[in-house]
Length: 61
View 1: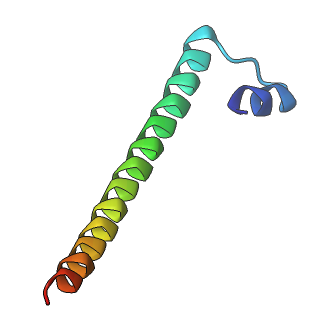
View 2 (view 1 turned 180 degrees about the horizontal axis):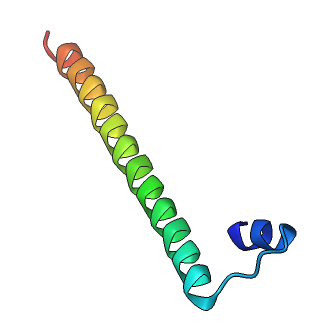
């Protein structure tokens, strides 16, 4: 998308600029993916703890 925007504005990127743009976009994508994975893991842990607690309470006569 970054390269397409540059082309639409009739701006020719140097190879270094194109490389830097791709590195930034890739880095942002990886960072976002990591945050989503961490949030998903924490949510799964909370759900597991909640269900384990309920199962424990039901097991006690």
